[in-house]
Amino acid sequence: MLRIDSHQHFWQYEPVKHDWIDDAMAVIRKDFLPAHLAPVLQKNNFDGCIAVQADQTEAETDFLLRLQKENNFIKGVVGWVDLRAENIKERLAYYKQFAGIKGFRHVLQGEAPEFMLQQNFIRGIAALKEFDFTYDILIFPKHLPAAITLVQQFPEQKFVIDHIAKPYIKSGLIGEWKQAMRKMAEYPNVYCKISGMVTEANYLHWKKEQFTPYLDVVVEAFGTKRIMYGSDWPVCLVAASYKKMLNIVEEYFASFTVNEQEDFFGNNAAAFYMV
Figure 1 (spheres, rainbow, N blue to C red):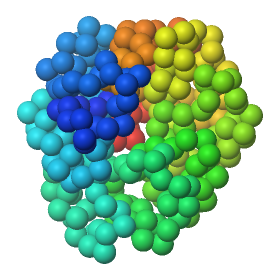
Figure 2 (figure 1 turned 30 degrees about the horizontal axis):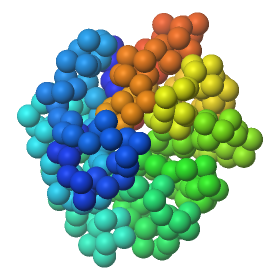
Figure 3 (figure 1 turned 30 degrees about the vertical axis):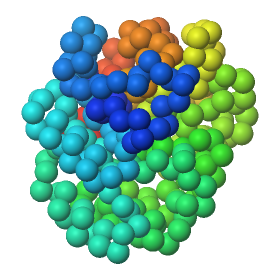
């Protein structure tokens, strides 16, 4: 059984490129590369990871592919490509030659909800299936209605919600997010990453029990075959060590069957990303 961290990032820190790393996140204003992650994964009994884009350029995709080629514990890459481009099929055909690339992502959380419903963006999503690429949906709760409208149009496309759609854990809001996530889970081609939660809570003063109501919603809605563990390393380091982040879900899933735990900690990610 492969244990896979389905969501983490690498970067060589540049203040302009990574301007989203604000003063409250200053601890991650430095390089994070495979040499830094490998011992952490090993210590926590993970066999590998999925590297996800953090910058919206094809240069970022190429950078991650180089790292993947050099490090066999990187089991796949979720890159970036301009899905709105006129030549999107040409770009996807180009990336299909690299076995390491599994899918793509756009930082939709930084866009208005209607961005993902533009015709040129929808055309790009439609092209992914032809090349058997996945799509990671990175959004805030306010984007969920538009995201549901998007996925309704593509019943054959493999989607995964990043970071349980970033609910407002810090303020304890859950109602509208809960309803929308239940609706999203009705589409069997949509998976959900249980990742990134600590950075939606108070960085310095979160408690494990704060996450339980949100975990309950996701697990009840998606079941144990469509959820996957992701650390969101190194972003998680703003609020928790890798081990503390892992402990939250290890404790939560401790009462689940061995098979269910194996699915969550690796099998589902391997199936989704065809690792």
